[in-house]
Image (cartoon, rainbow, N blue to C red):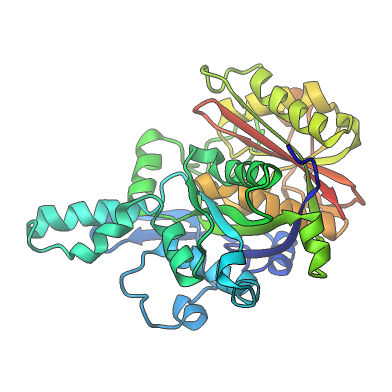
Length: 394
C-alpha cells in the first residue's frame, strides 16, 4: 500500500450554518439557529417540530432550473455543494481524469421513498410518476452527481448509518492509497424529512426543550438537522503537481464495531480513536481538541465520554451538534467541516452553555482561542459502528 499523504485541497458545504467553510466559521461564532418543520407534500406533523434546516440555499439559483423538477432535496443538496465548491475542478479536467465521487448517507432520500409509496397508496399504482422511482434508490444523489459532472471513474455510496459521512472519507482514503485514483470527492448528505422526524418523535429521541446538550447528565434528546459537506481528497503529489493549496491532511483513520452498541465503557470507540492516532503517528496528548459525535442521547454520549476520558484525559472537547443538530449520515462530515473551520481560525467553538459533563471530560462551553496541529473527529453510532479521523493542520 502506498503510504503517501492524503490531503484536503477544497471544500463544498450547504448546511444550516452556511454554504461554505467561511460561512460555517461565521455561523459557529453565532448562537444556534433552530427552525422548524411541519407540513410536507403528502403528510403533516401534529405540530411544528424544531430542527436545523438549510434555509440559505436556492437550488434554482445555484444549479439553474433545468432538470430540477424531478430531483429530490438530498440530490439538490449534493449537486449544490458540488457546484459551489468544485465546478471549476471538474469542468477544467478531462473527463477520464476527473476525481471520483464517494458519498455517505444513512437514508438517501427517505422522503422520496415514503412519498412514492404514499402516492401509490392514495392515487393507485397508475397515478405515480415512474420517473420518480429512481429517487427511491439510496445511491441516486451520487449517481446524479456523476451524470451532471460526467464522472467516469468512481460512483460510490457508503450507507453505514450515522457514521456514513466519515466512513465515506475513510473509504476514499483507502481507495487513493491503494493507487486506484489520485483524487476523490467525498463527504456526506442528509435531508430533514417527514418520515425521519416521525421516527425520531415516536422513539422519544427528540429534545422536548429543542436544544442539543451533548454530554449533559440530564440531556433530554437531540434535534434533527440536514446538510451536505464535501471534501476533495487527493495525494499530496497530485496537489503539488497542479499547484493546489493544501488545507489539511487526513493523517490517520480508525474504525471498529461493537455488537453491544452504546455499551457505556467506550472500549470500541476508544480503539477507533487509538487506531487513528497510531496511523497518524502521534500520541493522543498531541491532539489539540476532539470534535465529538455527542448529540444529547445519554447512552451514546456517556459511551463516547468514557472513551475520550480514557484515551485523551483533559484534552478539550468540541460538540458541534449544538449548532448543527443530528444530521444522521451527514453529521460526521459536517462535524469535520466545523473542526476544519475552527482549526484554520485558531479556535475551539464552545457549546454556549455551561454544565458539568459526564465522565469529567473537558467540554468546551465558551469559545476559546487555540492554535492546534491535530484534531480528532469522532463518529459513534447506536448500531455499534465507531469511526475516527485525525486531521493535521497544514
